[in-house]
Image (cartoon, rainbow, N blue to C red; front, side):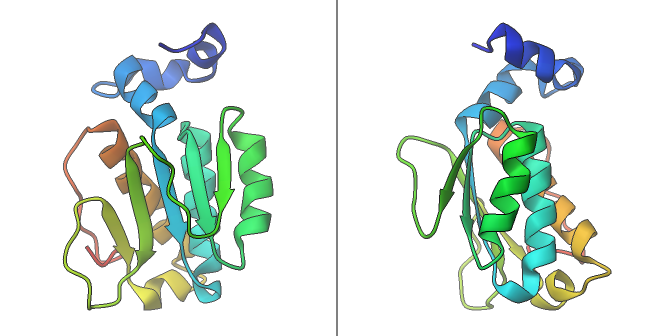
Length: 153
């Protein structure tokens, strides 16, 4: 159940069909792991900003950009738990954002970014924001996966 402070902060989200209160609760209870290398730092930071502002409960940041992104995320997500490194929280729905390697089998809880587009400074905001949107849809259990040339899935 959302607290009164959470209801106030996410009031606009609560009005969105089909997100509503149940979807926002799933976001607050969920986790997203953003594991990207230095060359995708701008896309990673855009994804982290979007996820924190939307109310994801736990972000796991793994990359040389993680400390700076964590500082930005703290300002956007008052209920946010930040973890760094290769960790996995127990008992939480978890979505991963990584680079496409071409070796891994498709995974419905993994959003893979095209390495070239994630490293392109012009595309970084679009790629990071789209990855965050797809992660939010998976955590909140709403919508259908959307395939763009910006992502590898």
